[in-house]
Image (cartoon, rainbow, N blue to C red; front, top):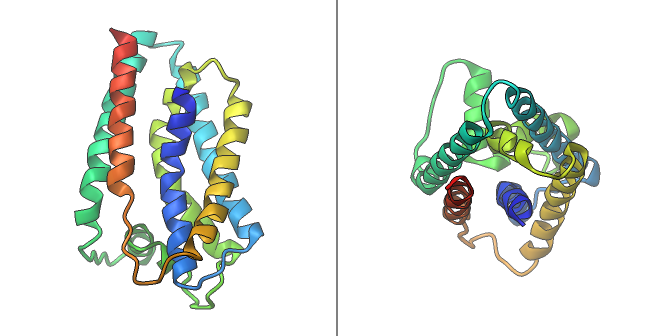
Length: 200
């Protein structure tokens, strides 16, 4: 149950991205959705493998405590993310500035303004969306599920969250204001305290 809740929380950003694109009439072809889902899941898998490796050097207690801290900090970051996205950041190094702009506004990944997300545009977007997975995925290294099962489930969560976002957009207008960062923030904090309870 905890794993499903964790993967659901990680997929919220992907859902927000898909909804933002759909509301702005920017198409995300299936192959771009597959690329985004694959990269995000690979990043999660790498993080889990890292967690499995460090388990040989750090006690499970400290890994769980570190998991609590990371989840709690990510929850607080998500709660502050709404205010962060109201500000414009300009950095002279183009690639860094470009990645920040995508983080602040997912639709910036469509930099050729074709209203269609190509594969080469989907790649940087996928890495932005997988930052949470990369930083916190090793938490799942303590799961009883196999890493490949988690990879497959994470892939499905990511892919179908995009398709579900497109479906939801049919009932919303472009002017609809949505920001699920606060919701995902509370979920991360909930997961943090669930992890803390498992330690006690």
